[in-house]
Image (cartoon, rainbow, N blue to C red):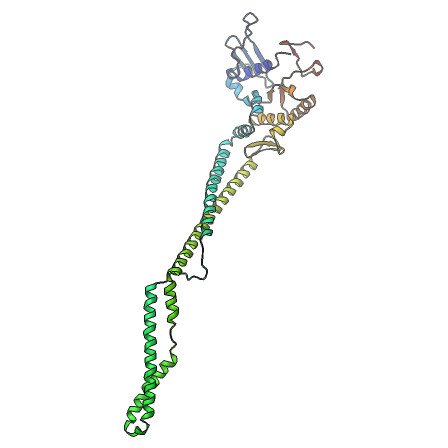
Length: 375
C-alpha cells in the first residue's frame, strides 16, 4: 500500500505553503506532470496549488485571498503533530509551555530555582566545614572569659604582702602597748594622759585588726604560675565561640536560601496550577509533560493522540483538524477510542495508516499502489 504519507504531505503543502513543500513535488515518472492540489474547506474557503511553482489560489466568498487568509485560522502545529509526538519528554513540556505563551516566565522561574539551589549547595558545604571546624576546637568550661594580666596579678600580690606585713606590725604594736599599759598601772596618776592616748590608739588598731581578713597571696601566686595555661584556654574558648558564631550565621544564611528556594518552588507550582491546560489531567512537572500522572512513555496510544491533538486545538481552536500519520502503530480498538473522543470534542482527524480492506468505511479512503482504490 503506497501513497498514504504523500496524501498527508499534500494537505500540509496545500495549506501550509512552501515550508511543507517537498524538494520534488512533481511526478517525474509521469512525463513531467505537475501536481495539482485543490480543496474546499468547511468554512467555505477554496484553496488550490498548481503548476511548477505550486502557485496558490485562495477564494473567500468569491473574493481573492492569500497565504495570510489561511494563516488566520490555520494551526501549523496541527499540520506537523508528529513532530510533537517524536519530541523528547523535556521538549514536549517546553513546546506546550511555549505554545501556551508561558515558556519564558516558566524558564525564568526554573533558572531562579536552579541558581538558588546551586548557591545553597555551595553554602551548605561551607556550613558543614565551619561546624566541623568549630566542633574540633577544644574548650575549657571552667576557664574565665577574660585573659589574666600577669603584671596586674604581681602588683596585687605585692600589695597584699605589704598589707599583710603592716597587719602583723600593727598587731605587734598593739601587744606592746597593752603590756606597757599594764606595767605602768602604778603610774596612773602621772601617766593618765599618756594611758588615755594609748587606749585610744589601741582601740583604733584593735578595730582594724578585727575587721581585717588576711589576703590569700598563695592563690594569686598560683594564678601567676598558671597564667600562660589559663590565657591559652581563654584564647581557645574565644576562638571556639567565634567559630560557633560564624557557623550559626552561615546556618542562618543557609536557611534563608532554603526559604527562598521553597518560595520559588511554591511560586512555580502555583504558576503551573494556574495555567489553563488544553486537556483535563494534563500537567507539567519539573519540565516533563504528564497526563493523569503518567509520562509520555507510560501513556496508551489513545492517550498520546488525545494529548497531542488537544494541544494542537488549544493553539488555534478555529483550526478544527489535525494530520496524523502512521496510525497503524496502534490497534484498531485504540484508534476507535481516539476517533470517538475526537468526534465528541468536535475535532476532525485526517489520518493515514496501513490497513486491510476490511477497515474501509464512509470516512476511509483506500490507496493502493499510489492510487485511490475503488470501493
